[in-house]
Length: 178
Ligand code: GDP
Ligand code: MG
Image (cartoon, rainbow, N blue to C red):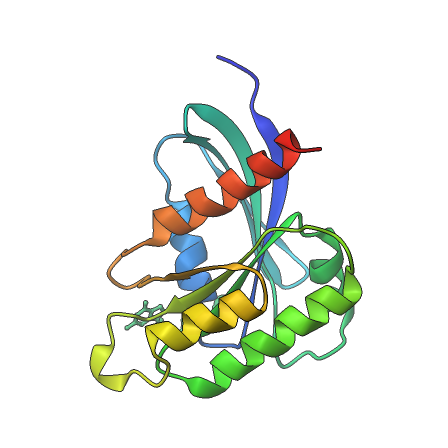
């Protein structure tokens, strides 16, 4: 088998309750490889080797962001170690959407002038009747902050793999252009 790219560290960010761990557990359950899993700093770390566009990439996914723990060492660690970020909000919770913009600003401040891939994720899109954030708001927020956008449902397993594949593609593209 050809050598795999990476390992890339991908960090999940976003308010508590938006579905980060639900997304991470789908990632952890990927069946095309033997993943590994461990606990670190009160969160979880998952490693998988995934094939995207016939390239193999090893991804370490960090699910340890605690939005209550403002300015903590763990938060600093997350912001500094990511090769890419997944910023999650729930489409049913406008405050989590506003928080996602704050996180984007915080990331840009902390890592100015780098081209770290970021995807803005509107999760819980199965809860159509409780929607507080429209698709077009999500889209335009991503455009303003110069990142990609996708709506997912961890509960329905909708768009979750396109999300992870998308971030891997961006990481591979960035590697190719340096
Ligand atoms: P975290 O705090 O960001 O890690 O959020 P969790 O993954 O623990 O999810 C918080 C709650 O939202 C749990 O009760 C999940 O079952 C639920 N949840 C997560 N994703 C979805 C989703 O896509 N749709 C629905 N309906 N519920 C979800
Ligand atoms: Mg969690």
